[in-house]
Length: 84
Image 1 (cartoon, rainbow, N blue to C red):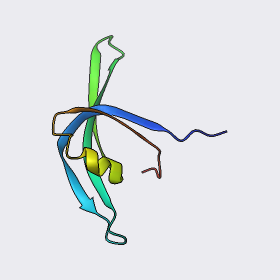
Image 2: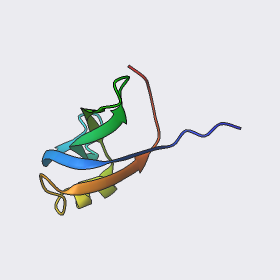
Image 3: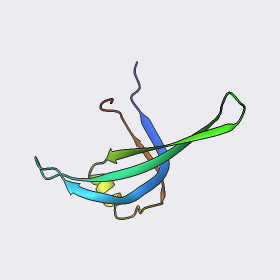
Image 4: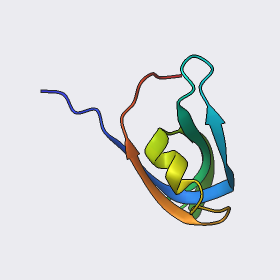
């Protein structure tokens, strides 16, 4: 059995951008999410790293795009389609 599930919890980096697919006109929203992770390094001091990602959503996220604003905290769920 395989599980292909991702949950991203972070802050919206810029206002959501609503778009339409060229092929079929379906609505979707592009979200920019910033996440941060922290750990103790070899010197027993705290270190951190901030990562940014973009998520492209479906019609449901297009409706949510009117609610979500920059600097809002968000939890996004979905599945991985490809790796970089």
